[in-house]
Amino acid sequence: MTKIRTGRGRLGLPALAVLAVLAAGCGTKHVDTGQGAGTGAPTTAGSTARAEQADVPCPGETPTPTRTASPTAPATPPLDHYAENHGFKVPLPLHGQTRCDGLAAVQRVKAALEPLRMGNDYTPESTRARLTGLGYPADKVRVQGIGRTTVGFTVEATGMCLTGTMVPDSTQAEAFGGYPDGRGCEEPRGGH
Image 1 (cartoon, rainbow, N blue to C red):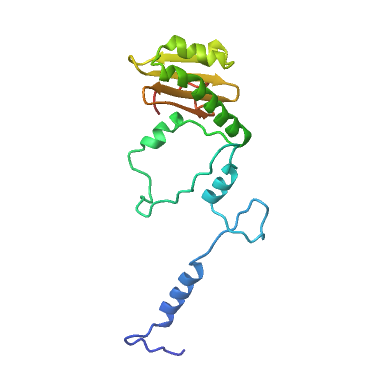
Image 2: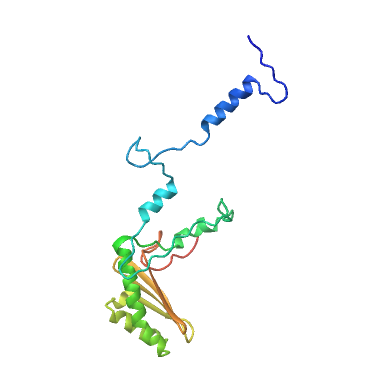
């Protein structure tokens, strides 16, 4: 048996073996393309999910610049579990043609309500009349007066939900695909 001298600045054979094992595992990437092994394109769960949800710009839409994560963003979720316990209240996004249909519906709703806003007509009755005038069934339109100068609305449209407010400064509306744990377009109540 040969002895290796392990003086200052030198590593013994056992230490070299441990370093070799550790180095062999560093930088390993697992390839999962969903197309079988050996395709050679490394992916991560996050990049796969983003690729599946990527949408092309809809007619009349200006592409928005993509945002990258902030270098100061925390790497771990908050410890209070608020997001986890209230995720059922987060609206589901629309994708593909339904997303384009939603954007078009939002523009129609805003255009229909803008004359009311400009004329300082913040009554639920006028808002309901405008929304049903767009062809939405009266039983699928919910309007609520919130004070003298604010009206909130929710429309259960085919394949999507439309919700928004009309206030003196603007008319806001958005389209979404409902809620994960809910039925219809009303935000679920309660908590987990």
